[in-house]
Image 1 (cartoon, rainbow, N blue to C red):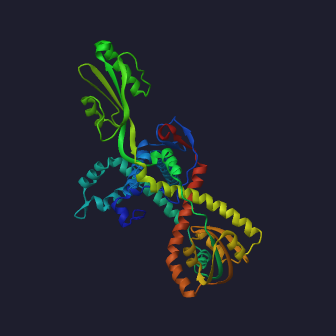
Image 2: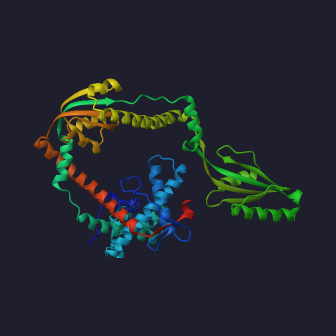
Image 3: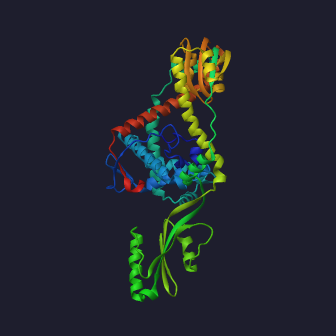
Length: 463
């Protein structure tokens, strides 16, 4: 009965990419979980372990999504890990709820869904070769892909049932439309915070404190230890190599002593450092999968360890405009808050618009019969504050924070929207309003499940 749920054209092509990637949407709500290293998976939800494979699968999804948008993910590893943990936990919570409701997708449903994905078809028929080749390319086994798909379909079953109870009342529609299309007449005063221009000293200080934000070309941080065979003798040198290798493997410090010295510990980029040729040949082969290498020449052993990936900071001149924008944004927020509090106090003291205009050097403008929507766009008023202009408040309204500054208004008249325009907007906005309401209710549903659940995270992974 549920096989055709959610089968949009996009979903048919590659459903697994959408596996509850709530990252960057209104769905996300990070909470503080109990932390423990005494579990095998990435997390435990109500006593059930979530396999590490699901976590790394989510990490790859999030990373690929970011990189497809041109985002450098190297400095965002911790954030990506946190988002991936949250995703798998929320997915597991919803899946467990689907189990309770008897809405788990069957193997037959999963099979039918896979058979119907266009990416796996050839001449209109399912191709097992294309299916397996596709999974091989992205490093997934059929069983893991099918399990992910089964969970995804089960969650969709659950949310389909949840959506069945959603509705949008006429009162909700009327409230929103009236807030957009009511025509208002009155005066609006816009007060702009003073312009801020960061000094060269501020720019340099910000750059020094945040060099990791300005990643350029990527490289590897490498450490190389040299063991002198002649100084130690062959047997002692071999014994020392074993000790150093073990220390490096266990991330323990290596002491410099007779016959042992740290030859190199620096980031390696495109330019080759001054190291023996055999060491240089080994460096490109090192990484997360292979962290330690041992090479030798006639008189020495060399132990080379990959520590971590690094990025060479871009020069200040290349990122100066970016820093200026960030500093301006940060300062603008503080200046706006200070100005808002001053204007709020003045309004509280019953100062009129003319007095406020003179005191704060604002711009006063008359509006006559303009829709609230038009005024909102022109002055950057948020939807949550727009209702203040169309309400029944008499006297001064505000102050209101906007994208253009601080706004204070005096509304003389509010006319309801024309019938034909109201009907047109209702048709246009009803599906959007319904979707927004559903997203809000689903998030509330997830939040409740989180609050009632016993959740433990494997802290060894995300630290």
